[in-house]
Structure formats: C-alpha cells, structure tokens
Length: 161
Length: 317
Image 1 (cartoon, rainbow over the protein chains, first blue to last red):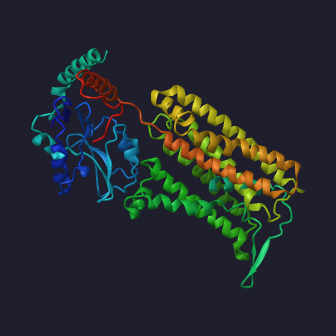
Image 2 (image 1 turned 45 degrees about the vertical axis):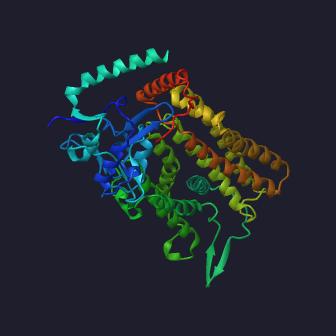
Image 3 (image 1 turned 90 degrees about the vertical axis):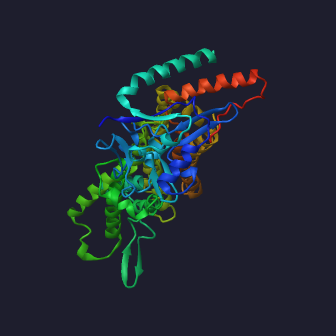
C-alpha cells in the first residue's frame, strides 16, 4: 500500500472549522472542536487561516520521547504515527517535544491524542467543501506539492518586499 | 537538592570528615536508643521521596506509571522512574540502617558499602536526570545541550551541600571549632562558582546555537523573565549567599547569617530551574516563516485598503 499524506492548501481555507467539528464527532462522538485532532489557526484581522494537523514526521519526536511507546509508527497502516490510548500514561512529554505543537492532552480521556488519519478515511478531507485538505499518495504528490509551495513562497516574497 | 545532599553526605561519611560532638546524637524511643548522628547527612532520599509522587500525580492516568517502569529502554522518562525508585529505596534503607538501634543489621559491616556505592551512583543519576530529560527535547534549542545536565548536577550539589549545612545548624553536629563547617561552606562556594561559570557557558553557547536559542536567552536575560534571572538566579542564588557566607566567616557562631545565605541559595536553585524551563522556545519550522511573510503581506494589503490597522500579534483560533 502506498503511503498517503494529508496536504493542506492554506490559501483555499475559509476558516469555517467544519473539519474540527467532524473530526471531534468522529473521534469522540461529541460536537466539540476543542477535542478535534485538527486545529484551524486564525488571524481574523487579515483573513488568514491555517488548518494544522499532524505531519506524521519521518523521525517523529513525539514517538522518540514517549516512555511507554504508546506513540509509535504503524508501517502496516499507512506509516501513520499514532497514539495507543491503552498505553498512554498522559505524561504530555510528546506535547512538549513536537515542534508543530500537535499532540494535545484530552482532559476527558486523560490521555494525549493526535491525528490518526481516521483509519484511512480522514473526515476532514471528506467534509471540506473548498477542498483545502486532501489525502493523496505521497510519491505522486510530492513534486507537485513542492512546486506549488515554491511558487507560493516566491509570490509571498514578492508581496512581502 | 535531595540527591545532591545525599552525595555530599555520603562523601563526608566515606572520607570521615571530622564532625563535632553532636548535642542531639541520640534519643530514647520506646526503650530503644535511636542514633541521629547521620540523619542530617543522609536525609536527601526523604526529600526526593516527598517530591517523586508529584511526578506521578501529574500524569493523566496515575496508575499507569507502572507502564513507564516496565519499559526502561524506551525513553528518559521511563529511565527516570527506575533511577528515582532505586535511589529512594536504597537511600531510605541506608538512612534507616544508620538510625535504627538493631544489632542484627550490623551497621558497621563492610557489606553495607555495596548498597552505599549503588545509592551513590543512583544519586548522581537522580541529580543529572532532569537535565538529560530536558536535553532529550530536540525541538527546544535552549534545552538541547549537554551543558544542561551538568549545570543541574552542579546546582544539585551546591544546594545539597547547603541543605546539609542548614540541617546541621543548631544540632552541634558540625561546629565551627571542628572546621567541618568551614570545609563544607568552602566546598559549597567552589560549587557555586563552578555553577556560575557553567551557567555563563550555557547561556553563551545557547545564544549562538539557533535562532530560538538566542530568543530564549534574550527572554531570560533581557525579556520578561529578567527578574527571575537577575533577581532570583544571580542575586539570590549566587551573589547574596557568597557575600553572606564570607561575612559569616568573620563572626564564628553566628548561625543566622549562614541560615539566611542557605535559604537564599535554595531559592536560587529553584529560580534557576524555573527560568530555564519557562524560557524554552520551540524551534521555528519553515512554515512559520512562510506564515509570517503571508501575514505581513496581507496586513499591508488590508492597511492599503483602509480597512483598519491590523494588530501585529497573530491570533489563535
């Protein structure tokens, strides 16, 4: 099975936060965006929105520091980095270690949780109306993604000058 | 502090530093004579035993700390559980051995050296462990250096030796006549100087290590935490104790000066850890820079359109 990745096009995001809602409903059964695995960071004053989800890093710091290896990579499951809730002790070391600030402590379950690609069918991708988030094969999207990123970066540099 | 005081206390025992006749060497309890001469030297594990449960209470699911104990090879949190547990158990056994009056324990036996040596090694582990744990956080440049465990070790030893001095004041165990207090305060002052040099090297190297390392040092030394650094660490932890101890050396028998110096030094050790913990800033990822550029560009555009002045700070959702 090819490795698939979540790709966020921040320029398409309208900040509706539907992704947060469906994520929370899927994982917790509650319509509570604060328990969502994806977070939309907003700069309302300039209309800038950035959905932040786990990057499932190649060398995940969260898995490196986890004392029980509850946080681990699953090669058999799209190489995702996931947290086994039955093993997590809630020490929050992974929260400190992640440079993206991704895993977060769920006060209801008393464990740390993170994006797990919804077992292969990410709900945020399914429900995003403007298609700001997509779930694509890593090898097929890599170059296109890089090119798109570079173009956008160049544009930003031109505008920021 | 607890581990540091155990290390210094054990060294005093091993090198047989001359102690004065203690005025509180033993007490009678239910017909047994308890020997208290070593309590002030070996009380470190008691402090660590009081502090360690807070690590467990901080966990999301408390009883699962056993999972960490069962996986010592996985991370420094797990190893820390083992190191602290062994130190506390052995330290308390050694303390009990030195206090209890039971002859069948053979307190003078050479065999006791074995648990003493093991406890001594694990005391080093306990003192250095917090630094190693922070060092393992690679995403925070301020912490990710080998100097941090060393700094915490020396800080633990200096506060530990001061804790021993404080705990012996008034008991007559270490008096000015014997010179033991002089040896201890002298050693403690040397440790404080080494700690100061290490702190300077630590900040200097972190300032040059990475952009966020520089930001962290700025935050600590010149930013909103400058009171913690200059007031708590430098004045309370280094300057005041050294000055007061030197003044106290001119007034033998004045325990108040030593007492104040000791309490200030312990607060200094606390502020050192607090400052370093709070000043840790995460590494910047390339996306941050991109978002910064985009934010500035959009803010400029908004300004030009006359839609009001945007704030500079990014807002969370």
